[in-house]
Figure 1 (spheres, protein in one colour):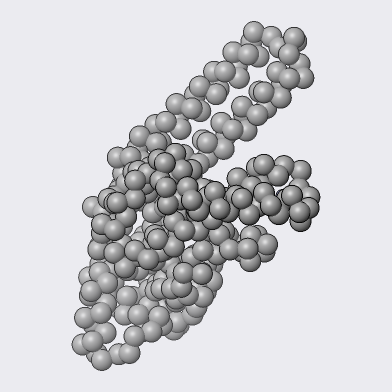
Figure 2 (spheres, rainbow, N blue to C red; figure 1 turned 135 degrees about the vertical axis):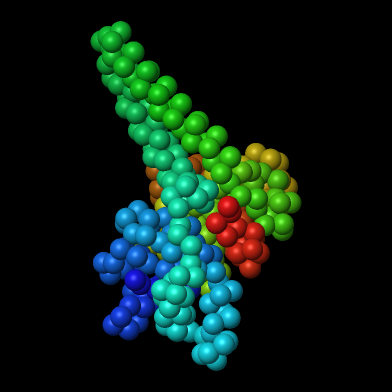
Length: 302
Ligand SMILES: [Zn+2]
């Protein structure tokens, strides 16, 4: 049995018979079929542990705190990992089920992204095909492409419906954000959980919303995509605050191109991206600020 404390900024603290080690990502957790972790741990992490075929035992955060105080141990990721392991060995945890709503949510969102990617790729191929071979396309070709596209689209829609069903309620502060529907909120819960990060800039970097993270190519594409989708939704909702942020950023980019400071091929799409980026950053800051509200609100939502 391993005890895992995930709050460590630089990685995960793992307690085993041999003591405590700190590792960078869930991918390098030592081989052991059973792991114990706090129930409030971020969903992608819990999902990854299940995906690795482990038995995941959830420990109540409050139980860890109580035991820590009882033994008057100082709080650290290392001691918490050990306490989590001890509590699990005493049988004080509960088994994480693959049927838990939260687990299904992460899985469904991943499926949704895969289908979306497949649809875009296939439709690009089909459009190219039509452009180059227009007259030579046979009825069978046409049928095959259109049928495949329809199937993928249907799968995509069923994922979206499921997301709507599985998404928890956003924390109270975020419910005022018009445009943050169940699907997008589900996407944020599944891919961009701010509770993984202590500081705002770490979260922004993870979501690919800092120049540094983009230049070094170290960010989560899924998180970035979900924030771009959310930003587009905000603009569609005619949210004036975000529209203003978008327009200002876009204008700055337009001027930059006029001054010849960027020689990219597609200034128009570059300008749009700069705008979305700025809106995404504003949204990520708002969402990060609510992370204290998350734990109680979410847990594993039943
Ligand atoms: Zn440019």
